[in-house]
Image (cartoon, rainbow, N blue to C red; front, top):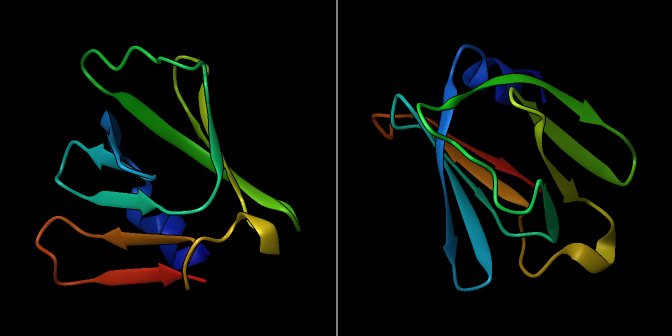
Length: 103
């Protein structure tokens, strides 16, 4: 998780794309986090005007919560019933030279 977090440090979330049954979090440098597992975005329709800074990730046995500025958070479930494929998330850096797969 440490490498995953370090790739998000200092970035701003600029958009959340809903694609069929998963979401993509797009950051200001072009980094994309794709979330395949069950998740909850709070608030439901966040305002991302100008981007919101990534603050921290909080991990528990059942989930990881990504916390951003403007009181925005995304909780990603990690229990067995929340998986719809082999991985929970993938993180691609801006130039696609690095990919992190979270299983």
